[in-house]
Length: 218
Image (tube, rainbow, N blue to C red; front, top):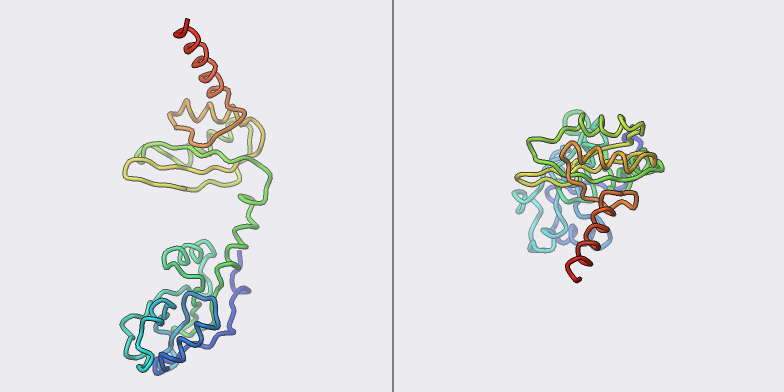
């Protein structure tokens, strides 16, 4: 997806010689976590709102150049990589650079999230299955094969949780054959994390548990 149309340039970067008091004033007027900073016309990093309020407002931004965060993306960066950059740097704005570190503007988190919202993973009708397997044993190709072998389309898959030993995959599939897909995942030694009304295996376990309780109480 093209992201270049989402570049906003209504905020002028601070020059490194700016007064901290002026930086704090701008943050009072904005809801952004960071604002860009330039030196001699080149982008050198971002100052965060949290840092700005901790700085001595009688000093200059140059006195705190060490605290600037140099994160940014390029104008042709893939939207998924842009989204990842937002997450990594805990920011709601992302500076966009062109040739020779030229500041072009910024992306806003909400705009990039809207691209994700328009993907089939979110806007196609279907079901979500969350499965878990050992970190050395899982396979994207295997998970896709499990879904497609049951005659169902797959709209997306991603790693939603990872630990030292296990990985959880979140899979978006069409509504058909949900129970068959769940059972096939189990046959391939995946643990089913999500709850499904169609999951006959779980219902059978519940019924057997009831019978066992009734037997033990006789």
